Image (tube, rainbow, N blue to C red; front, side, top):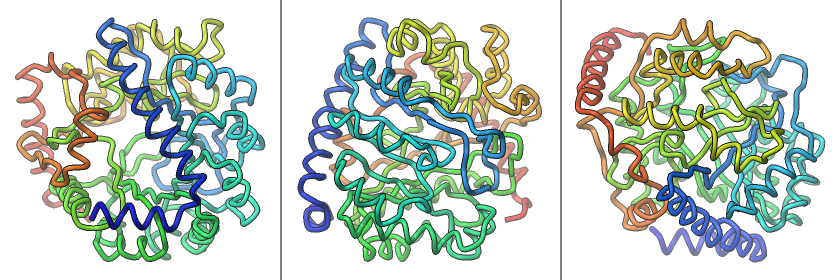
Length: 423
């Protein structure tokens, strides 16, 4: 599998772009994680991977979206973005995730990417704004990989994303990227309406035939003002997705990314481990994208490094959530999230101003932590990479037996509750 994957990438990617990827993301990315581990030993936390939602606007209206896409446009100005990235670079960071809304609706996105040729950017996009001209510009820049979201085929895509011809238009943007020999991925938020279509070997083989280099599977999380619990996966389906990813990694020549498991198959949360935090379209520094509360902002005079390093709010979130669960604290323990928000007087970072009411309305549910259902990586490459550069970084050393027992009880309760739930 691995030799075929390497061969396919070498043949289908512009050599200059591949060199940028290997240096800016590969080599410098590894160094940023090593610096992160060194900081942990001193009790300092600054994530090696920073995710920036640069605006809230989007042309689609996806089911269950927690971003204020219908509100008046709010975006981070390029001066603030450049200052933030420069500060992070000064402390060893080289990789940044760019999110929205739809990032390509930000008028200065390409200027931002061009300003930092020594970095690597992953842009989360629906692909519909990637014209042939935009794709050519991305190839010239060379330091960006588009991660194009596909939520189903024709009918499901329209239903999930609230518009017509979504699948066709997204594939058009994907094709433009691949025609320009750009390293390109496809992301899917796995839910009840797409698990049977997109978590299949035939779908991955179709992506391979189109020339896609990697795929990222993450599971739908029912949060926000229009949460849709009917779309959420049941526990056995979460295990199904994990098993599918592990097996396909060892079988097919396409890289598969996940963000919630270590090499031994143990669940983890990137926020709890400190490996990533999130910046909202107003510059607020949030624990993660679905925890829409903050105390600090990237416009603070100290700079993003010192602000995150010294944040008691983020520190408490990491430590308390890691002591209580290896999964998603928002889904499993919304009461703890509320407790920390109140303790620190954190502000609602949404434009709608209803984040606390949404939090209070949430009922505890299972997440990726399903004790006893761990599925270790089969392929040596993924086990090796995760061992050194993506694991729990000892964040869960204080997790209590009672927390594990609570997780098992919650899992049992919710499995029983979901037996007769509609699919």
